[in-house]
Image (cartoon, rainbow, N blue to C red; front, side, top):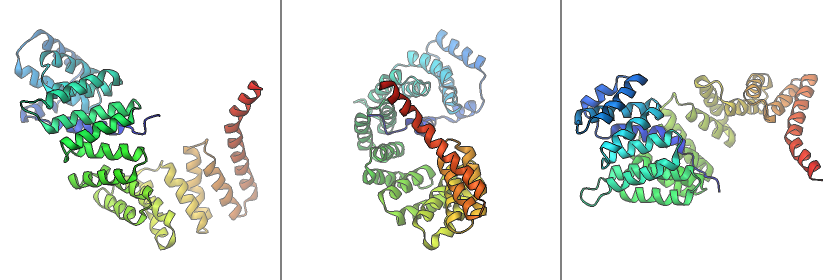
Length: 350
């Protein structure tokens, strides 16, 4: 079965976690300077040629973290690869190498590195539960992206057992359970995540989404409102709240329209908001206002028949029969184009 978990969603979380690991003030100040490709290459060569230079290794680690934050993954792989040769028992270095390798599009090569980082951090002498959980979360993401949800789930459960207060582990566990259809389990994990980082908008958004799908619309609406209060500039909160209020109907529908409008103020190219607004405005007898949103939705998703269907309704309500008919023809054409490959296949098979 294809993986129901999108590991790419956690790149920023994992990189932020990595950056926070034992960063000395001197390293942080050096990492503020964005190095050129030539400077990174020179640093790699210096690392290769020198042994036992702790100051150089610390500088390389700081630069490597910066490369990860900047999305310069291939350069980070080169740098952390040399660091890993020099410090094969450093769990931070090995974890960083694994993260860079995974982000560069090589999950198969990243998996044993993440496993090794976990083994090092979870050593018998001096185990570091937080670092070990970091490695397990990355390992779970790698496995889930590879389509192995069951193994990924066990890995995340191990991470949570090892470090119950590990935000990334709880968030990743919730995402995986949600993708696997376990709304109750996902909600529990997201609740823990929001308790660990109450100001983190991502955790509140996922919690609201899971609550909505579970059917607890009242709590979902309250959670979306919490998200909007925490981060009013995050369009997902306004979009989720607006769509939910319109779905519920009743006196909250006007607030729903306002929330969708606020979402579009932040991101004018939200297809879902445009269609939802258009549909709701038609239902409220405001077809003329709906046209602008539906036309933009049709531009954003030209192969989707829904905005054209809604446009045909809007034009019909306004008595503009020719334009309504033209939109109906577009809807028919899109549906026929979607069926045509299947028809062609059946003809060839016949």
